[in-house]
Image (cartoon, rainbow, N blue to C red):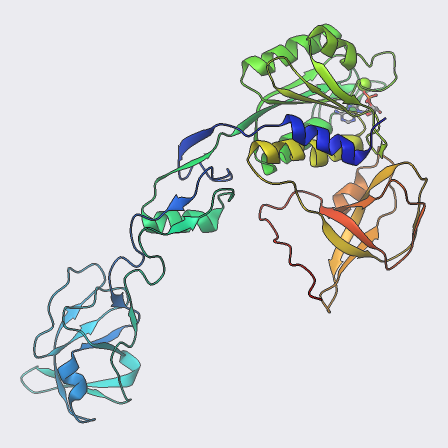
Length: 416
Ligand code: AMP
Ligand code: MG
């Protein structure tokens, strides 16, 4: 049997990067940039007012303090640029700065007087100098700069930047299509009535929820009887639908209906590993189909399924999306834990941040692989290393957010 780390390495080794595709910016959300994104426009695109106020020329600024300055016209956001004459003009936030403007004085720093004939003057009530309250063209992004690096997962904050720069299409790693196949004669979907011995299918809905959060699109979903023929047929259908990742649950253990290894042999798949020194999820299977699609045979116990998806399917998806292997968080164990040597335990855990910025980890009660309730209360997976038997409080342990984080946390080396 191979170790958890060896299994992860084997998955990473078999998962190659997806080809890249050009997608509309909205469709690219959640996908990973295949190349740097270069700005073809500057941001701001032109010098514009940062405040509602008055545009003054250099001549106005040279006047003695308190001199009334003739005021004429309004430059509003969206107006074409005009040229400042002898008079100052009103200007609104975001308006292009008129030709000849030396500074913008905010409304709060001036008073306006209206004469009997309706003409207006403005008097400054605070000192003004050149270049105030003007957002310069290119101050945020000069044209030609790389604004987003290859490997960035496109999130709403990036969508704002692309929109501001008029970038409507981006090149991303092709979305990965995935299939979810749930085996088990006992399974019933959703709220249908249960007969003797039947249970509700919880793995299927879980995977349908979890895989998109890892960047995969579930293109095929089937609940299957305990039949090798049905399994083979469903795997073929998944490949035909373009699925590069196939996740099945159940039928990989030692039971009489655990037919997945045989079905995979019939499909001509290479079984890379089956069974590993990890709990939950000891019977986990990983195979490569002749088409190159990756098949994860996860055990049916809900926690084995969750761990298999979180660690192995996620590791493959990161490779396929051109992302480096995920780095664990490191947190301080709050209470001692005992375990058998020879097994990596992946435990439901609660991660918290103390007032003094320390990540703290607590392993939850109820680690059996059928227990779903503590999973819903957990926010992290703690990884208890294979060789350890007794882990003391205060020990620093690797752990992972329960669902993969969308943003990458850069690792800062500890200063000497
Ligand atoms: P298996 O891996 O097929 O031997 O199943 C192991 C355990 O997981 C059994 O108790 C199954 O009833 C249960 N199980 C299998 N598939 C599912 C599923 N989709 N949802 C919830 N429990 C399941
Ligand atoms: Mg089964």
